[in-house]
Length: 250
Image (cartoon, rainbow, N blue to C red):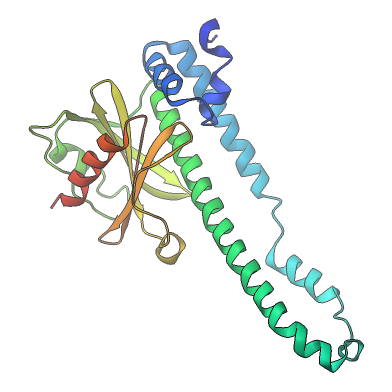
């Protein structure tokens, strides 16, 4: 059973709705309290199950096409020729504006959905009794562990002279696609680094600057055909420091 001081804030935490100071304090508490960690983990699992169940009832492209074809277009003769000349440019502008608006909303919704899923994975990892499957501070131990478990390879940076520590890693799944999840510790904060094969045009318009969202800071970029995501309750400056090390890793 979760502690009384935190039980009413767990739902807001897993939904990314807690202010950053409270989210950071709760994240530290989860690492010390098995009961709260288990409760948070169960809520994340329920949230993901509901999300997966909801996707089963999304309309198919065939259904959308059937609906579109069932709508009869108005007769061309019903609109006077002169009015068509006047209305056509305005109609084209309206269509272009709506298309751009839809594209921007779709891109943001898709990015937010991915970030939400990554935040869930990060929280579930922090709440788990076994957050990583390979435990080591040595990058030469962690990297080879992934061979044969994911369909790509990657490089990890040297951390000597930094405040960062490699904790370990495990296989993670994003949209049923396997990838690597690495855990780094910065002072008393855990940061997740997710690495997946890049989806090309699907994520090409996403920015690379640190972004605060869902009580966490996110940063993403592509390198050598791979898409990197960094997630943690740290400042944008700390996030950028780790991201630079990963980008420069040879």
